[in-house]
Length: 590
Image 1 (tube, helix red, strand yellow):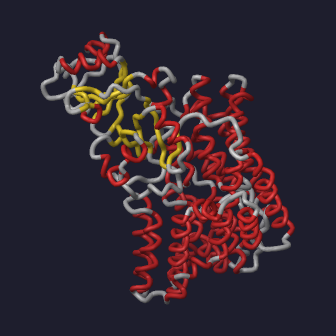
Image 2 (image 1 turned 45 degrees about the vertical axis):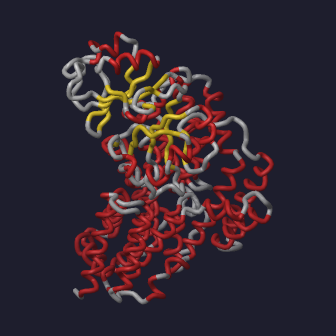
Image 3 (image 1 turned 30 degrees about the vertical axis):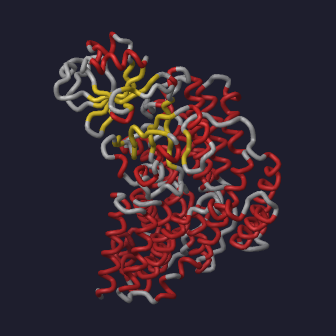
């Protein structure tokens, strides 16, 4: 084993560790891979940068633009808002309609914007029906994956897989995945409808528990000091209860505690309370509580302005990602004060001003109604509340929808490559005025493209150094004696496990060439192994980091890591069994 092979394996291990620990942004990981491989001379510059000219990368960028045009028309947003009316007050009826709508749309446009639009719609319906958002949001994310697995353009990983298939002469058409995909969708949707209500937790977010009137009460954050007479008392026996002050949240350390009347208060506890201003001031004067400095004016009085409490989620392509609240100057820029930041189920309330924002972060903020209305129109955040009923720009809807349909139909006929069609569709949308050039460029998630380019460079290095052949040889030695069918099963679940640890797109880039090499050693057709990677990567449900939409619903649903494993792992295994049974029937091994 040469030193280049050892370096490549070490880089692969470090890449997985960085993804799992989430210490470094994923796109920066991609850049670091390219830099290290180039600095060590493992790949020449032209090979290092091949990923940026990859046909799949261009197609993915163009599909971001096509999806943005449909979102701009407001059709998806209007549909999400109308589902509440169609449900007629039935949570289960709403669940069925929402899952079907998300599944169908995700087969033809990018999953992420679909889920982004449906999150506030779900929260609105849950508030109206008195249901918990956690019963709906994870199934919404899973339904988008199931739908995306059915077509070539349904998910970025399928597009990546198609590019590797083309290298061995296996042409993947628009509906190549559909036969197996529909069976997976039917079984997956049945699982979601039968078990989500029974198995998912009954979590709520802070903002979703407040009615419109309650949210306009005075809200503040108070701390239990060293000398407070509340230490050791339970919530029901404190002056808070007798004064009519409502406790919305109790933070201990960096965790949000479940509110119980018999819970004993500790020194350093942080309470988020709401109620009448004079009663809050009176309690502060009695030294029972200490009002957070953010609400004090010159150290003496609370600002006497009616405030609203609401939650903001950092949007996937937000330009604020990577910047801290202090750098952004949120108070000056958006006229809001930040109480806390929630990231992947962990609540941060200390030194949040210096935390770099990431996609899916939820900020609990306080501001005026005017500030809320202003933020509703911003692209940097997703306001976690209801969506507007009206279509944003209805005159653009026919062109946007027609362009996507034309791309799908022409790609299905094979008249032109999907990359050319997608680019042509994006160009037409700009020329026709559906999107401006600035809108088109801003709709592309460049961090995803940089990450994919970096992973392609790592895959190329594995191929050139022989690391890929060694890995395939080890896998062949371990499973080859059991026959190609058993090897396919082992390979599928290996790819699925890797997709759960890191994002599905890097897993697809790493596993697709490995599957081709493994098929060569087995002496069987590579198509089944390529399709195994496609379905394994597009249905990574059992962890939050397996798929981008999981990260989006993590905070609004109030989930923790165990929730995804408990509810998603059985579905992951079920989908894997179906895929491994059907793939050899559609694409024979020999």
